[in-house]
Length: 459
Ligand SMILES: Cc1cc2nc3c(=O)[nH]c(=O)nc-3n(C[C@H](O)[C@H](O)[C@H](O)COP(=O)(O)OP(=O)(O)OC[C@H]3O[C@@H](n4cnc5c(N)ncnc54)[C@H](O)[C@@H]3O)c2cc1C
Image 1 (cartoon, rainbow, N blue to C red):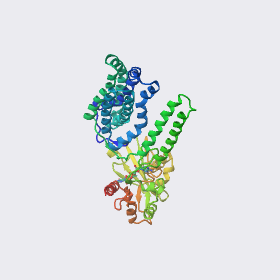
Image 2: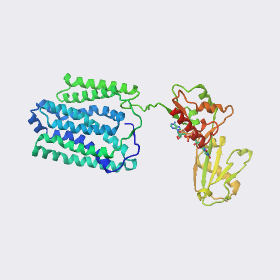
Image 3: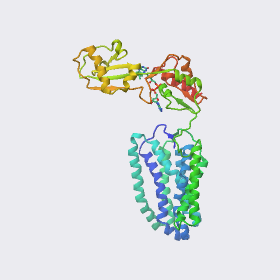
Image 4: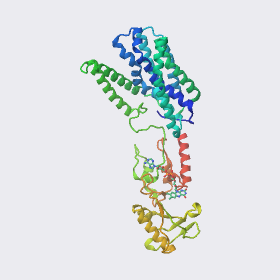
């Protein structure tokens, strides 16, 4: 279920309410199963109907849980949970008044529908109602409540059936439902639907049919697989599953997302220019020619950093040091920043850009440090101490960066940045530092481009 909480509700009442709602889904069928002999005697249930009566609600839960989950996405989780709790009370009160086993069976089938609303929805609400860091304790409390009640309630049910009669059994689960209803209504917040999805009616019908046929076939198979009553439902179930998978893969709003496909009305692409150039991400249909030209012609530059930590400071108390090497070492270790001033630690930062910056990305850390130390010894003498720590970037090799920031390569023109920024079909929008005509290469350029893209999405 695609849901996002507005501001997570916390606290014991929330978890207790949801735990009670979840426990109803276990206790409710348990009450019937454990006291089936007494009920069957009273309503004169034929032996061949006994199994169906006992498992009817669970069977419907299995068939309907996916459909109900989709309803939760479409109509609101809290609303659905509360409807399920009310439904559980009403259906059980009617079950308690059952004049015949046929009526009771109908109520059990209906009860399965309302229980389906409680199973997944209570868990989904727990997830979005409790912040991630408090979730382990919340789940612990949730499970402890469920186990405790599942241990106690059968004994309560047995006592009720003995003391006041089997009809009162059907009021045990509703008592829990009413408690859960009160707590949910008062304390649980309706989460925002991240995306209000359309109900995939075909998908939920197919999965429901597949599960019903499977359970029916399995029940019939207890008397032998060779009978058509057993294998026909199983074949039907397998065929329906295949249809379901086919349908879900094609559906724009699947009930169960079987691929990692995500559907959206708009996409904002903020990939670095270097990643776009690498072809690691493909667009179908292809991008317009002007955008492809911009991606090819603009340049992605490299600026790498090498931080070296020393046991003590041996350089002057200045921010920036520039060194002009010999022609044979052109562009190597020319810029140094004194990191001691802002951090209080004896750290120097050496920059390497362009060709040399790219070349050393293929070197080992040791070789890079040796190269840096060669320059520092030229600057400060042979007796300077060796570094005790280091940190080195390799932006060009990073598959999620493929460079540091864009530049105007020879052959590119300013209008290419506009082409790079242009949206495609008013649905695919582009942002990131490279798309800003004036402030490319910078954080504020990236930020401003994001605002522009957001305005495009908003229309
Ligand atoms: C050494 C160095 C020094 C700099 N100094 C300055 C400075 O002093 N001032 C300044 O303003 N700017 C500076 N910059 C530039 C600034 O950091 C960038 O311009 C800015 O961060 C770019 O932002 P962006 O959102 O366009 O891209 P990024 O911040 O690179 O964001 C792109 C995102 O896309 C993600 N991504 C990439 N590929 C994929 C993929 N295939 N699938 C999913 N996600 C993907 C990346 O993980 C990343 O999160 C410096 C940059 C470097 C490297």
